[in-house]
Structure formats: C-alpha cells, structure tokens
Length: 616
Picture (cartoon, rainbow, N blue to C red):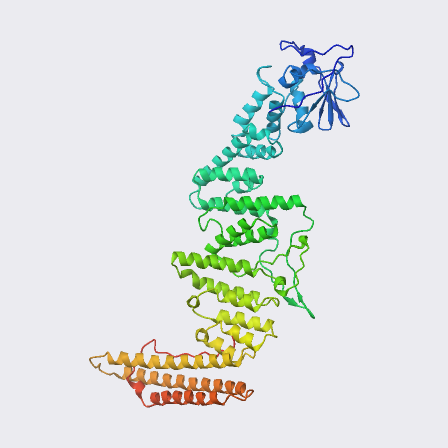
C-alpha cells in the first residue's frame, strides 16, 4: 500500500539533504535517550537532554522526537529524506491515515526508544497495522514489532475466545489495514470454529445457554455476517443459525421490541377516531436510518431457507421494521413470501401491520382509504402466497388454521372506520368456501364492521352478509343473529329457517338411526325387569327433551314475531312458521305413541339443546 510522502527541502546551508545509508549505526545512548514522554496541548515531547531533530504529525498531534531511534527500526521513515524542523510548517513529516491514530503512534515510539511495550488484545490489532505501515520488519532489527505482534496474535489472542472478540471489535476502525493483513479473517475463522465446536458438543437441540450468542451479537454487521457464513459452512444446523440471527436482530434493531406487536389504540373521541401510528423516529439521522436498513437487508439475506429456522413472528417483526426504514421492494417481497409459507404459525396480533405514512416526502393523504390504520394490502399478498403454496403442494391441512386466523384478523381491522367495504370483502373472500368449517368467526367480524360503520346502505349490508354461509353458523350464533338489528331482515329470516331446518334434520336423523339399530337385531333378546325399566326411563327422557324443544321453539317464534311486527310484508313467512310448527307436533306425537319402547338403552342416545342467547 503506498504511503504519503513527506515534504522534502534543503538544509539551512543550502546543500541538498542526502538519503540515509542503510548501514547507519545508531548509538545506544540515543535509542535509550528518552525515559519518559510528556504531552503539552497538541504537541508531544521526548524528555531528554539531547535536542529533538524531527517533528512528525499524526492527525492533529505533533511529535517532537529524535530521528535515529525511528530510522533504526522503521523502513518507511529510513527511505525518506528528512529535513530539520521548519517552524513555518511545524512538522517535517505528516503520516496520513495512520492506523490507530496518535495513541498507537505513541506506543510505536515507546518501542523504538527501547521502553517496554505493553501488548494486549485492545491494542495489538492497531500495533500490527501501524508496524506494517512503518515497515518495521526483521530487515532492520531482529525481533522487530511486526514479528512480536504476529506472535502475540497467533499464540495468545487466537487461543482465547474473549481476546479474539476484543481484537475483532478493535478492527472496526482499522479498515482496510486489518482486512489486508488477514486479521479479520483469522479472528472470524477462530470464532466460527469455537462456536461450531460448542454447538456440536451440546447436541442437535439448540440449548438456552448458548453463551457465544451474546458475544457475537456485539460485533459489527459485516463481521457478524462473516462469522455466520463460516459457522454455516461447518455444517451447523439451520435452527442454530436462525437463533443467532434473531438474537442479533433483537440487539441491533430496537424498534422490533418497542411496539410493533400490533396496534390496539382504537378509541372514539367526540367526533373523530383517536389513534397513533408508529413512524420513524424524527431524531434519527439519515446515517442511522441507512445503518439500520443495511442491518435489515444483511440479516434477511442470511436467513436459512428451511421452514422453522426462524419463527413466523420474527419474520413479521422484520417485515414491519423493514417498512419503517424503507427497505428495498425486493426485500419486502422476499419477507412476504417467507411469511406466506409459515402463515399458519402466525396470530392475528402479528398481522396488524401499521400503515406507515411517508411524511418526509410531503404526501398528503386525503382519501379515507389511504388513512387506514393497518396495511391491508400486505396481508392480502401474504395470504395469496400462502394459497399459491398450498395449491402447489396440494395440501388442505393449513387452510382451516388460516381461516380462523383470518377471521380474527378481520375482526380486528373491522374497527377501523376508514376501512372500505371492498377491501374487507375481498380479504374475507380470499379463502375458498370449504376452508371454513364454521362461520361464527366471520359473522363476528361482519357484525363488528356493521357496528363501526352504521351509515352503510341496505345494499352494502346485504352485500357484506352474503360473505358468510348461514348454514355454517352455530346455534348460539343463530340466536345472536336473530336479535341483531344491524343485519338485514332477509339475512335474519334466512338464519332462522336454516337453524330450524338443522333442528328438524337432526331429529329425523336420530330417529332413523334408532330404527335401523333395532332392525339389525335378528334374534329377540329375553327381556328382564332391568331392561324394561331402562327403556321406560329412556322414553321419559325423550319426552322431556321434546318438551324442551317445543318450549325453545315457542320462544323462538315469539322472538320472530317481535321482529316481523315491525314490517308489513311479513305474513307469508308466518304461514311457513306454522307449517314448521305442525311438522314438529307430528314428530312429538309419534314419540308419544310408544315408538320409543322398542329403543335400546344406548349411551349415545341423548339430545341436548343449549339455550344461549348471544355469541360470546
């Protein structure tokens, strides 16, 4: 690497200054001339009776020293044509970009003057780089500083985990010297070897006492990447690599722990919604934002491809943080695809991604849809990636879990008054119809949306309610819907008839199964007093259940009549209710005629009807 040249001039007598001969002998009394040093403001002096004849500037500090101790050990200074100090310039030689700065050069001077040199992990990297800068090789003196520094690095530092971490951290300010001298590479390889050996000794399962994670997490991102790459190259499992990345992100990306868990601040004031959206910290400088963005991009690039190496929650946190610091669109897309593959492991809170506004660009968000609290488009894309993956793998096991997750997410975002019905409906209809075994969660989300948006037209309310299948509602959900004034009347009637049809089919199916069981008995069994008593008891139970069913039906009819009394054109529906009532009476009378006497006492022959009136 080329070194900066010092100013070359002529001596006071006008003669040109000649280069020093390589065989020059430096007296020992000059080498050991200085037994102490003192610093006055920005000048540094060797305390000796022999006057100094060389001024060297390192950054803003000027060192007044003797040329002979330096010439005897530093090839770089020996090759220069030095001149006496010129007061006009205040220095004879200026060392540009000297590794380690003035503090390191002071230790170099102590070594050159023959004073004891304190080599330790905190200064060894800087001394090794500075000795290379000054060319302090064996050519000029046996046991020169390069040899001593290399021996200390090899036999002392690299043998110790703690010392290696210390040296690697000190290399962060020594670029590019530390890279060119392979100090960074050797430290990273040593750390990776020790970490991988620790993991192999603890077994395949990542233990909680992975002490090395904390130390590695203190390093700069480029050094961390090199260590992680080296650990992975040694065959370390993806779970360990993932745990290391998550640990590092938790230390260097503080926004992940400060409130990106999902926003719950829905509160209504007198006339407007009161909520707050997390945005980039205004006090952060552009340099800090760039550093955070670099860390995010580097960590995402190192994520193992195996599912389960990192949690879905962590990926969603990384996605939110990447959006805060305006990461590249390609990185956002990569994270969305990864989350889509693991969507069934997420929860609704993790999917609540704030709709960050780029106020730095002065964008005015006037439309209500642009002022939504959550970013619905991101979740829509994640869901699309999930469905594409499921279709490619020809799997259906994850759709049921994701349907519950989506219903819970819809219930959360339904509280946003700026959420359009089009986006809500599109997201709710993203899953195929057979993905939901029960539509109670979807009904709950629709009810919350109707409550938050009371000004919806009748057409929009009907359009929204068509998303759910009334036949997939539970009895409790049907009872709640029957009393829900926010639902359109047509949907209420549809829910009631659907519930009545299910009740009738359940009763008919039960009777058919009992008759079929009795017909399978080819040989009559001898009746005993105990069996007769059991049959009579079972018959009484059936009659009791039928009486309860009739009472429930009467209550349901009263509720229906209250609703239909508000509307004039409800008479055709009353005729249909009477038909259903007559059919129920026919079933009840058939049970009273003694048909149940032939039924056997089976544990499964029980009818239960809940009387809940609301959906919890």
